[in-house]
Image (cartoon, rainbow, N blue to C red):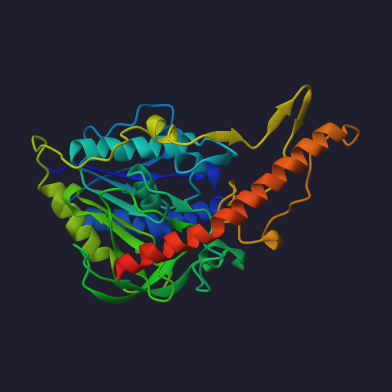
Length: 342
């Protein structure tokens, strides 16, 4: 008897509009669940926000699929300012660790792949706008069904896909920066080198930055071979097998504790102020593509208190200097990574 496959939705109905939720369910999530059912397995789909108050457990499941969704809280993969600590992020990270410790197969899509990289100790680019001219999303298109685009990726050395060029459905603005220990890059953007697939074959882990499940986008079929491999591992699951090569961090709490994190809202006496405003998808100070993309003049201050204004301005100036000093080193590091892929 096969165990059900755990399908994790990071948003659920409560964090999307009804029309978007219905569209994603019908044209994306159901693509995965229907294929799994056709292979003789059952599924159990859970919304992470509804599960976050419970211990993350994979007991009674045969594998884990992580769907795409919103950005991961940056405090899990870098130091700096954090606007929120998402319980859904922590829950899904702990699901990954639970599946890894049990030796269960894991398949992460888009955000799911990024979570895998973070779980293995890797980091993310907060926004890839300054790294590439390739269109990886169409977020300004309005209705969700128009927000994905198709572009080419090159696959090489994958355990599940044939080497070569594949056309895939893309809908993201963040990406893998530093690769997590134990992971390998097996696909990247043909024009910009953005990481598009990562694997840990010895741990039965695979993640795609693209959305192979998007039935509404014309793309090559990469979902069938990925799920065939994933479900094959689920069928062959041996609970007595010793699991080796696990990540150094095996809980979301310890993972988040790697970096110093400051709140984006600070207190001084009876005043509270935010020294900067960033768009929701850029909730930290790294990878900021330029002044035009960030409102730098939005202050929540008592204008009659010049001391507070001076503190905030000095902090902002320091942040900009740190960003400018790091930019060249970041680009060198990114180029070294890209050179190692080809």
